[in-house]
Each structure stands twice: as structure tokens, then as C-alpha cells.
Amino acid sequence: MSAPDILIDDLADPRITPAIAAAREGPAAFDAEIDADGILAAARAATALSDFGDEGPLRHRLNVLVQALREDEGLTRGGRITILDHAIRVMANRLRIEDLVKRHPEILDIRIDRPIIIAGLPRSGTTHLVNWLARDTRLHSLTLWESEEPVPAAPPPADGPDPREQRSAEFWGHFEAMLPHMAAMHGMDAASIHEDNELLYMDLACYSWEFQTRIPRWIDDYFSRDRTDSYFYEKKVLQVLSWFRGGKGRWLLKSPQHMENLAALKAAFPDATLVVTHRDPVAVLRSLTTMLGYGDRIRRDPTDPPGLARHWAARIERLLRACIAERDAWGPEQSIDILFHQYMADQEGVLRRVYDLAGLDLTAEAEAALLGYLAENPRNLHGRVIYDLEGVFGVDVAALRQRFAFYYDRFPVARED
Image 1 (cartoon, rainbow, N blue to C red):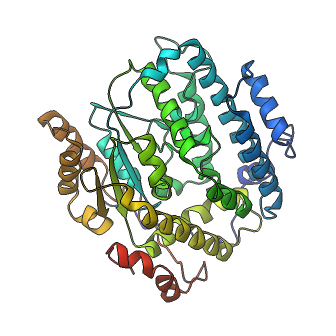
Image 2: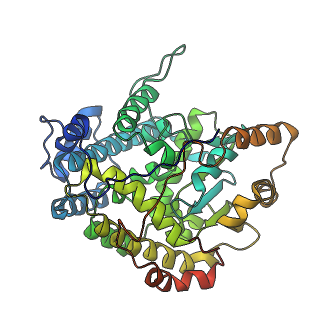
């Protein structure tokens, strides 16, 4: 029996529960006006460590972030605190990484061997694909909780749950209790396989906080700089994670952000296999704006769905133009483009193409595990969300398709009405 369709009818004027009202305000004890120096000081206090590595670029990026957050007039106090608290967490992560590498310099000798890297627009099947391929236990994959805290603050217990996983599960459980339809769009299970955006977070080169804010100053600064060093920092974090796992094994990674950083990605991971998923950007916007608009009841007042759609139409255009400009950095001998409609029509065929490209044997054991995942996770498992890009978000779809003509010309995705 299929789950019922889901119509979220209060995106423009959300019903605010007591829990959402509290989240909008945020904890009273948190300094919502903390600056870059305060963020770094809080991370040092949380870890009793002091070396961030190259601190100059970090301080610049934090200053830009803080200023951009202050310019985001629609952001609630709680929404701002969430971003600032994330900044403190990722800076604490960075301190622990730098400390661990200083104590174990052999970490930097670990080879990140032929990773399989998935890139693609948000809402284009990348989460499904990475969680599916992660059923092959020969591959290292990154759980949400591990991406949030790569280095434990203290050795985890040998015979019990890792406190990092418990913290993640508690945080996301509370989030999904406030937003029960989120599981149908993008569930945040602590044990699920997650994007490697969090690894870029530690070099403050991650676009994840753009999903919770409207910070054009940050975006302009991000695009103005060469992000290659940030991808080498991601490689360093992967070396740390590999060290915890014994030093060997191929990584399976994914992030939409890689689409706009293909040259930097190639520089850091020259022997990787790249899989790029492509989907009609209009369908992407329908899904993405609904998902983000649903969450905006926590972080924005007013929610302003038309403003959200305008923001993300521009942001996705920027991402896609960067993707096309840098796509030739990867040759056909190690990269493949997957069209969403072809992926949905023949998932097993896509699997075999990826394995062939990666030079990875599809053993009987791996195939059984992978096919089992498909059986357990049919599309719309938690219900099909009904989208209204034209009505709720005020988008002229014909004009939007004209705006993305450059992308349709390059990648023949099926247009989804």
C-alpha cells in the first residue's frame, strides 16, 4: 500500500507550533551577535586547542559570513544562531583534525585511492544513488554523524553507541519532529550516508548554510576565490577518516556542490571516478523550494516563498554555468553523465555503467546487497509531495525554462511538467 500524497498548504503562512516558536527564538544564553573572533574563541574553549592551521583565510570567511548574516533581514534569531553554532562546531572539528595530524603525521601519507565521487543538482537523485552504492561494503562511505564530528572529542566506548551518533540522532530527531513531512523529501537519519559538504565546512568553503539563509555577500565571496585549496583540505579530512578505518579502501562521496567545482575536484582527486547526475532544473526548483520553504517556518519570518524561488533560480543558474564551464576537466575515461529520467527508468543499468567505469567488480554478494536496497527503498516511500512552483512561489515556468536553455542545450534532460 502506497503512502498518501502530501500537500503542504501553509508554506506562505505557516502554522507555528510551540516547538517551532521556540526554535525561531533560539536559546536565550547564546550570543546571536557573536563575531568571527568570538566564533574562533568558542571553538578553542570547546576543545582546549588553539591551532586552526592557516587562520587568515578562515578569519576572512568568518567575517564575510557574520556580515552576510546581519544583512539577512528575514532570518529569525534562532535561524542565525543555528548557523553561528554550526560555525563553532566546524571550527572545533578543524582544531581536532589539526591536532591529530600533528600527533600522527603519517596520516598525510595515506593515499585516497580512486574515490567514486557523485555530483549533481540538489534533488536529482544523488542521495538515493550514494546510499544505494554504499550497500557495497568494499567502499568507505560517510555517515551523517561522522561527517558532523570526524574526530571524537574523547575515545568512544568499545561496547556501546558512539556519543557523536547519539548527538546527531537527537538533533535531527528533534528537527523532524517539528517538520514531520521532511522525511518524504530529504530525511536526515544520523546513520544514513551523507554528503561530504561537511568536510568542506571545515575550510569554510561549503554552501550548506546557503540552504538556511539568503546571503548574497557570502555567495559572491565564495565564487570570487579559488576553491582548490579547500578541496585539498577535504582530502586531508578523508585521510584522517581513513586513518581511523585502517588506512585502506576506496571512498564513495557525493555533493551537489562538486558540480560548480569540477576543476578543483580534479586537482585534489585526479584518479577519481566522477558520476554527474542531471535533471530538469525546473523540477529541481519545484522540489528544492518546497523542501526549503517548509523548513523556513523555523528560520525565516516572514517565509517569503517567491523570494526563495528567485534566490534559488539564480543560485542554480550560477552552479550550472560553472558546471558547463568546467565539465571538460574530466574526460570520458573517468567520468559519466547520468540523466535523471534514464536513471529512474533503468537503475540497474546505471549501476553497471558506474561499476564498469570505476573498474569495480560487481560481485554476487555486492549485487545482492544493492538490489536489496532498491527493494527496501522504493521511490516516494514516505509519500509523494505535491509541488506548486507557479502558485505558491510565483514562478513563470516558461521564462524559467528559457533562462536554463543553455543547460538544456548541453545536457538533454527530460522536461518534467
